[in-house]
Amino acid sequence: MHNRRDFIKKTGLATAFLGLGLGGQAFSLTAREELFKISLAQWSVNKLLFSKQMDNLDFAILAKKHGISAVEYVNQFFMDKAKDTSYLTEMKTRAEGEGVTSVLIMCDNEGKLGARDESERMQTVENHKKWVEAAKFLGCHSIRVNGYSFAKYSADKKDFEESKKLVADGLRSLCEFADTMDINVMIENHGGFSSNANWLTGVMKAADHPRAGTLPDFGNFLMYSNEGEKTLSYESYKGVKQLMPYAKGVSVKPTVWDGKGNQSQLDYEKMMSIVLKAGYHGYCGIEHGEQGRIWESIVEIREELEATEKALRDFFSV
Image (cartoon, rainbow, N blue to C red):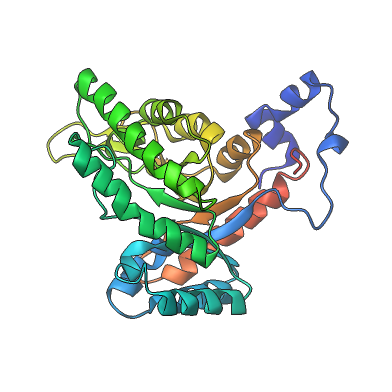
């Protein structure tokens, strides 16, 4: 952590606060308050799960063992169990037994929410309903879906607009069902059009439903990459800032993108200041696991987030 003076210069927070007539004491926290909470996304340990070195039922227990008391599930690791109440009960019992909060379910492989064919689009909505029900059963507040359409990415402006409208239509239909269960539906910037913050904010506006939200992922602003072609990316700090007004969750990766297809290391203070300026104080899910040192790398990010939270306490309040 830089000293406080360097941090103020870097972020411009002091100028903003003084302009509002607020002194540092207005942003102080008690020792027990947290600016944000830390959770663990199950994809962080995907290599252990796919290789059967770890069982899905042990995820919450192992997260707690490594100092994290909230988890984000991935449906791929219990794909055939969405309606298996005995299995879900075991998941719920193990998490609650460890004092672990179930935050959300990330949903993949259930179709294209923005398919051109209406029957296909509505079938995708139908496919996701069981995960809404599972999320409710487990005590989660949301599911995460993919905002994919007939073209994952295209340089054609007409495709940009059409896919945005189609995804918004599918999202709105799913949200209408999810609302009956008090569950939110989030779209993550997850490649293609969805990693363009202008497109994804457009989807939110077009869907126009209180249950619809975003899951800004710091490291997922790669729009297009193909060998021998130009890599296209959206600037991560700018993208997160645009998506935060709609955010119902946050996904933490230790790398970010610039607007020219290049990656660099995450500036935790800069990014978390963007998150907090948006008024967000919920769960920030770690989604990272280095090969050969998966749990060690997860703990390192947890500790970095904890240090960042402490460093920002003089500038933000809950």
